[in-house]
Length: 119
Image (cartoon, rainbow, N blue to C red; front, side):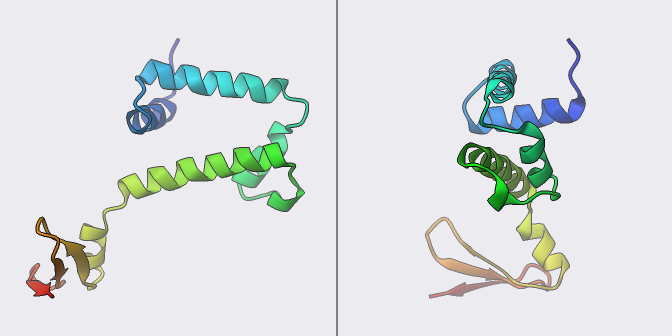
């Protein structure tokens, strides 16, 4: 069976964070999909509409809202994983504040990566 590259990449990144193999992650998603389609209390189209930004969350039942939240969490995790604030903020001319290995607060100036320790 051939899988779409986007699905494979998403499954691989989710599998890593969930301590599953790629095939285990895809099988897990397949089971969830099967149960969703079998569930009389869940309207897959309504859940998809909310996830796509075209539906109202408050109109969903409790199970549907749980599915939407799970979808949002997955999207947030993926975004956070790919977000490189250490690169993005200096490019915008903004400081980066982080902890060093000793637990001290370090401020990286956007100008030439200049460091300043804060106590």
